[in-house]
Length: 281
Image 1: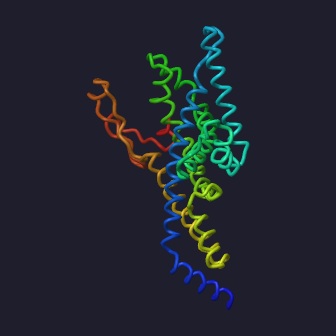
Image 2: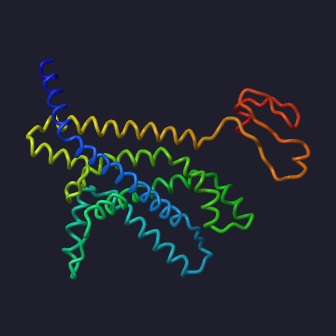
Image 3: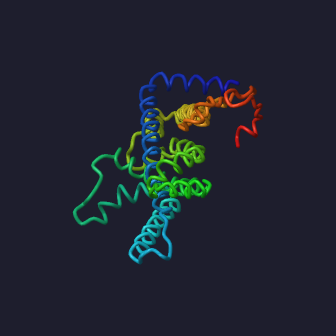
């Protein structure tokens, strides 16, 4: 108990003297994770759409070559960034880029370098998640969209992706939680995030374990709050159990609006009592 009381006293004293630095580090971590997750999702959706471009043996050879080349390049990108540690990716991009470029090309901003590394890494993981989400949608959805004259891009944008987005929401949330923690790697290139603040404070005060305790509590709070918000968002995307079945058919309007209410009868057309399974058909 004496040791716990001593630790609590050291943590309180360390926090009182450095809370501004810790809070700034948390803000840098959260902002980098949010922005990079959003950009990574855009990269993943783009790769997912490109990988699902229809290409049959009856298509001309130029289209088949370009689509095949595109799929190979995306596959290389995904395998390289999923198969190597992010810390080495950061070192290679930030320190290796000037080494391999004749004109000394380098990132002028550490923030930009960290943003590039985390976004590209997230995009590689999201590319496979999006591809799986697209393939999980019933092929009849694509066939129906094409039957009414939609192009591949229109089918993806208006029919497939909205449904795939809901299916991969847990994976998006998982990648965001991972990014909250993996941004700690960016201290290797000098980016001042939450973990870098811990290194600086601990190195100045020599209170390594109390500072690490503050870091553990801070990361836990960020991940718990993020998990709560992501689960709330998933429930919002599911929609309500009660809804109105709207239609533009004039004959249907003359018969009335069909209203679905959880646990209640259907009013409008007849008086049917639909249970949960029937409402989902």
